[in-house]
Structure formats: structure tokens, C-alpha cells
Length: 451
Image (cartoon, rainbow, N blue to C red; front, side):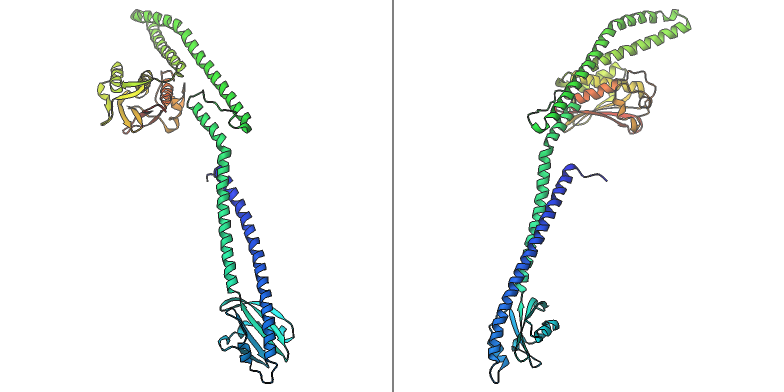
């Protein structure tokens, strides 16, 4: 399972922290508010019950009191219900009958013992508080005070606090994401610079003044790029100097080999074989020096010009003894591309030479275009390239398994590496896949404009 990214983890941590804090504050606020409101409501219920008990007590002081009439004089409103327990009987207003079940037996026992009592209960109409007031002559006065409105208020408060907690959690996640994005912005700049360097732009640098806190990182990064650039420049100069120094003796060696080759029929069997091997190795040596010189000038910027790539491809095919019919221009595609002429010739020529040496010759050279890129494909009828070698084959001086995958090699090991470098200089890429019917298909995609 893939591990979540840093931004996601930080945002989740902020969200969890915000949720824990807001949930704790919400629970504490709800608890304190509930206690305060309940205590206030119970005090109000006690005061009202005392007042009503005084009225009932005065009404019962007559010689023949009418209990129902006395209870009817109470102003209980819509939230309170009054009951009287006298001489083993319950008295209430006619409309209030049936409420005696709401009075807990324990509370009734406390009142019968002459103790003022109260208790929260739940009735059919919702939560309520029952207050019991003892009266003379073994009588008990009870008031059932409904707290439905208070309960609704507390429910609304709980909903509001829940929404606040959810909003705080979302805000915490958003703040964590924003903060992480701000913190990682310098690293994004480093990443962008590293990508530019990977693409071949060794002039990419970081500005230490942009983020003073990361000055050591940016300074070290720039020093690393400077050293890398200097090393690559030394390597390039070394390759160029060695190639130039080798050209003069190589030309002399090539001329001497040509003389020997012309007199090969006059030589004996072993001598003639030796001259043949020497001539082949000198030719290979010349190609190697030419490729090294091409690599040495690879850092030059591309010069895009309109080029008739179809005509160029046919000319390159003729030079290698291939029929012009192998060049195919896709229907609806233009034959004039905006590319660097020298580099494109190298790309096409090296792919054709690679197909000739290792793939039995090119069978098709296809030219097409996509909305944002030009596409060159070269097919051959060789053994193809194994999937595990399809990246390594574009490295310099590839030998061993990657080279043997396409047969015995007499090349320099630089041809496909030059193809990849020239494609990268255009901002494009090169890849190899299997050709339908067997063989390999090399595909080069070049953006239609400078990246």
C-alpha cells in the first residue's frame, strides 16, 4: 500500500489536532452549559413549587376544602402540572389526570417522611423535573415541571457545537495543507531546478535570498551543480581533445590500411585475413572517433529550421542501399518539420545504422505527427529488444546482455546514446517496443516547439 504524501499526513495531523481540541472544548462547553441551565431550571421549579404549595396549604385550611377547586386556582401555565396526595388519594385538575405514574415511588416516600425532594424524570411529553413539598395532615404537594423546551435548547446547542467542531476540523486540515504547501514551496523550487538539470540545463541555479532559512541548502545545491557542470565540461573537453588528437594518426592509419587493402590479393591467406580485420577495425575506430566528437558538441543549443524530413529520410535510405519505398508519411501529416537539421540527420542515420547492424535492415521509416509532437518510427526485422534492456540500450557503450539481445555487435556503443541525447535536446524522448510481426520498433517523439 502506498504511503500517503507529506502534505496529506500533515493535513491529517492538523485535522486530528483541530478535531481533538474542538471536540474537547465542545464537550466541556456542553457539559458546563447543561449543568448551569439544569440547575437554574431546578431552582426555578423549586421556587414555583414553594409558592404553589403555600396557595394549596391556605386553600386546604378551610373546614370543607374543595381540593379540585384549590388546584384550579394555581397558575401553572402550559409547562407545569400540579398534583396533591391527601388521605391516600390523588387529586389533580380534570385535564391533568393520569400523571401520577410520573412520580417516582422513592420521591413520594421522601415527601411522606416530611422531606422536600426533587428528581428528574422522563414523561410521555419529554424530560421533566418533579418537586415534592410535604404539607400538614400527611399531605404531599407535587409539581411536574416540563423541561422539553430546555431539552430542545440543549439539542440545538449540541448540534451547533458539533458543526463548530466539524468546521474547526476542516479549517485545521485546510490550514495544515496550506502551511505545508508554503513550507514545501522552496523544495518545489529545488525539485524544478533538479529537473532542469536532469534535462540538460546546467545553468539552473537557486537564489539563496529567496528563502533565508534554506540558504545553506541552496548554497550547497548551487555548489553541487557548479561542480557537476565543471566535471561534465572537463569530460567533454577530454573527449573532444582525445578525438582530435586521434584523428591525425587515425587518418594515417586509414591511408596505410587502404594501401594494404588494395594489395590484399597479392598477400597470402593469413596476411589477407589480417588486412581485412585491420580494415574493419580502422573503420570502426573512425566511427567511434566521429561519435565521440558528436558527443563533445552535444551541449550546443538546438537550431530549429523547417526541414523536409521525408526527402531527408529517402536520401539517407538511398545512401544505405535501401529502397525509398520504406519511407512512409502518414496521411494528413506534413513532411516539413521544425527540427535541428544536424541532430535529426544523426537521429535518423544512427537508427538506420542500428537496424542494419543488429536488426537485418530497416523495413519501414514512418513519419507522422500528433497535436503536440512529430513522430519518427524505424522498424526492423531483427530479434527485437527484451523488455529488461529497453532502457539500458540507450546508455553509452552498452555491452553484454543489452547488446547481445540484438545480435553480434560491431558498433561503437554510442549510436543509440546519441539518438537519446539529440531527442532530449529537442525536449523529446526515444523508446523501443516490439514491431507487430516481429522485430523492433524505435520511436522518437519531438515536440513541435521548443519546450
